[in-house]
Image 1: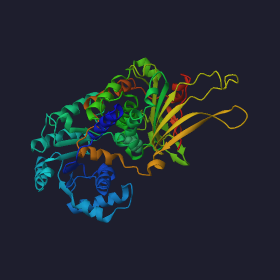
Image 2: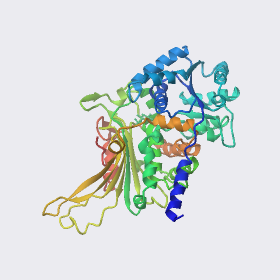
Image 3: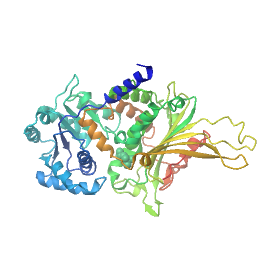
Image 4: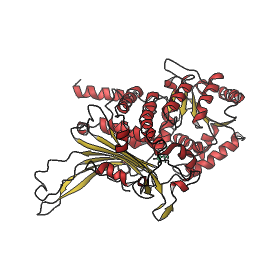
Length: 518
Ligand code: BG6
């Protein structure tokens, strides 16, 4: 066997070892009357059924306080599906089959007897695997996670399993805590009743195709990874921009702000995938080890660093696409004197061998001009001794943009010669677009995540040390803001790219943000 075919075999075996056969499972959704169930979970499960990706047999049990029969629960879900499914139309025969697998357990989360009823329901299944292979999806307020786990454990539906092969699993939604101590507390509560291998912490960004493709792009191609170091990269920009304001979520947002809502999870996840070292395999622990290592290399900031390298902002009234947007302070359920940030820009340093001296600029915000997320890796410029040097023109540096959403794709920017007798250069783009290449198939992040959790593969979920390390980064920054009211300079007009201090963050380094366009 020659060396390359040996390598091919090795790669194939590593890739396939990440996909297990999916055993029949019962999925129990706590918070089954809630928004997440209607908007995301049921549409995702339905689409998995359409694609015949669910195991045979499977069962879905909704657990919630509201009085309703299994039939009325099913009708509500059908209604929701018609509204929120990514395809909108519902295939009647798939739905009829799907609906047969759905049941409803009416109980209050703090009512012990309700868990007894749930147990009876689960054990009424004739298939042994349906009775034992259990996925508990906690789509509830995080303050109830510990209580649910405790009740499940008391009735014997959840057993802490130490040595792998765990049949019962908990899926927990974000926010996982609101700071490091609360996340540690939550972890301690869950770990009493479930092993870390049984806990699946969701970050829906990890379910996005394009976010998963970051690793594929980096580690399945020979040419880019060689450039992915301080020798070639000038800096990296990560933008997660949203055109919407906080809307009806003011109550939640007042407690979170952009730092907790987006940076602690989605943005740091993207950063860790962009910057981590190659894992030894694609197995969950190998990938997560590298992500944690990366997050631990983010340089802690002193108060002086925070003053220099962190920009926060809050939107005031403005206009986007001709539509007026109220100021954050005028949004429903928001304190009219709120100092909560709706925009953050940070300059982060990663103190490891690969990235020493390369700044990572990240930003996120609400009511920005477009909804778009992208990672831009900007390379060091070519020596400017030939083209443009005499006329004082600065050569455009090469850049590679990983477009996460929308218009998912990858673009490489380089200089080309404008046809003609004069030597005139112009930056041009080489572009890969998901839609053009693979058709407009964009599964919802929750489809992939639910399937992975049912298959008990934790690669796309956040490990305990990962969530805690991310909180440590965010807490250190937030602590500098405590009680500091926003200054005038920290407000931005809805529909703009944040406060001017965000431009200055790069401007003082002789760089500038490249704003995503749609
Ligand atoms: C959620 C945040 O986690 O992510 C929201 O709570 C945000 O505030 C959303 O709008 C963004 O997700 P997406 O998939 O629309 O980029």
